[in-house]
View (spheres, helix red, strand yellow):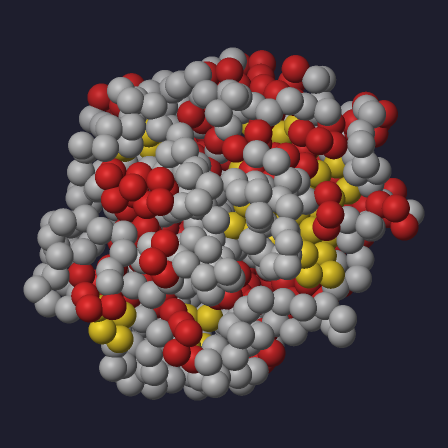
Length: 618
């Protein structure tokens, strides 16, 4: 599942704004979070593994593509990379490069098609003369905490940050650039915002430092298929899927709004936001760049599923009967898949419905069934889908899911009218991000839930107490996850740095740990990389992936085709687990590539990340 809020963006941000207004006035009521029972690390290190890795930590941020973060990254001599800079789409300073037109965006020629499509012919579209203006699109208008908030309060609310990074919670809001909450609202902080060349542009301006909240953009499965503009008629040896990724702003500013009552008549689901990128050559994303400079990074790691975003009342809903080609929107995708040389299966069974956009899970944080949510259609009943948690349990391998503000969410659930800030911060817990909340095996079993579903503060305690489990999934809360508009990439970097610092402080643990830093999805941002269609649901665009380990030192850029399932494949191979099910993507072979390292010749194929390590050198 992808981890964006199931509230409308404006509802989510209004909730957080009111939450932290209360927090700043009630610090005297703040209490300590609950402590979890430890898992002894000695057992984890004694279990046989294929590699020297005894601990995997997966940190999951929010909604950034690879080019959006690393579009201007330059690796060390001898390494190559595929990004905006290397392709000549942009220059090192962020200005348009000699091959800028490779990333130009198009709009359909009016009258627009009313039938669902995933590709337009050259006769049906034309390039923008200037890019659609980027917008604030729910960027935080007031800081989570006002400047001058005591550091003790900030540290109590967000223990996942180092002391020097706590001030980031009080800076970067866009309030002075918006008169009200009426949309559309162009982001005037961006240089040349209303006359941008038609292609990627840097998130920069005299009033837009890196430490700024910036606008969001929509990203849903059916919309992302349209944005990707995929047809075998466009196929080349470098891009055999024929996905041009050239309809990003057009789709979100034309097809989303006409079907969503909240946005109808408002040309703002991000405007040109999808084409924005950070510039690491100018100091953006400094800590992520530092990790890329020192360890291994992939420039061919993808989100597993198109889309992920949820907006109530949107036309395409959250479920689809994709096994029935007569259903609206299904045939264009299925026909495209059948046209590919390797004919990937849609992986949809007739008579079954599949989640294609986020919906609330059937379990509340404390394990109760969300009866009211299920009754009103806002939550999906629990299903017996097998998860990695069950697979690890069967082999006796310790694991935990660490969700930011989980303890507070439990308390808030039991006392929703509280004004205690220790509980109110639970509104930032991401229940939709906890993959176990959709199935009964863990969340429906009190003993299993207590053993495996924890808070991020428990994660840091486990490191300090030498009780870290073999596999840890770490999901920051909504303030720190790096999600556009409601969070900042710098806040996610702060969480990343604290984990890195704690590992470095425990050399014995660091020596046997793979710390994987990635995103849940690309968030609707443009990326120039190749996408390998695997089934009806994706793959989607490239997203960042860095692996920090004693065995990944050296600023290596890995080109093997991978996606989120590759993390699962690494865990399965390292601990000797079988694929989760007969139809899950972890059954795909590792890629074989001839000539072009980015494109598997044995599609569909997914790597298992083992080639990002140098185990033979130790």
